[in-house]
Image 1 (cartoon, rainbow, N blue to C red):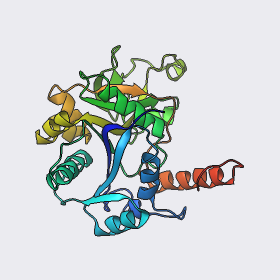
Image 2: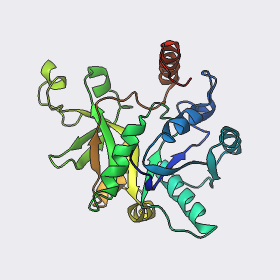
Image 3: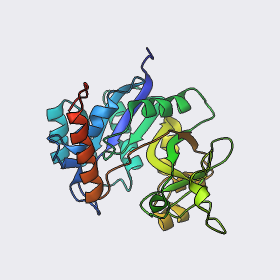
Length: 268
């Protein structure tokens, strides 16, 4: 069995969302969305601590009732990563203690994240000192996803380092061919917005001002590339994606109900 290491998973969870207001507290399954994500995270075999970070007293109360460790942050963070960094600083300030070697930023709208994927991400940073940031990607096999701006694409090189992230197809082909989405190895990859940081790199990242690329695409990870910080990409075979829209949530609820009907021991 893999041992726990100096790694924390921090789940930033804000109540207001432009596309799906109040999504963290949706509970058509009988359980709050943010708690589904927390329940997936605590199954990690590598993280020694899982924390929900929120500026919402409502989410704080829900987390405490579920037995989760929770930190109430300020409302000033501009993105989830900044909220994660603030939570770590708060937890290491009183009582004074060392920050973890690895910090994972797991958005609260990722209820179907595989614990094994989190462990792969943690190990990508923990086992290679040259890696300061790592993230996840899964192949794109559908045209609808490729052209959906809500589906963020990542382009990475032969060493597994991110070259760019975009809401448009990258690379953009001169001419379209049906075989482009069936190539092996895949050409197109969907970025999954989960990150593992070495703590000192996270501390450096949040001190940087927003970058031009970041503001144009509305993608915080571009701040790292703009400033010369490399991001390692860990590939996984499949992923259901986060909950950004009412339709995303309806599909999640349908999958959850289907799993609960299966004659196997899956917690519902």
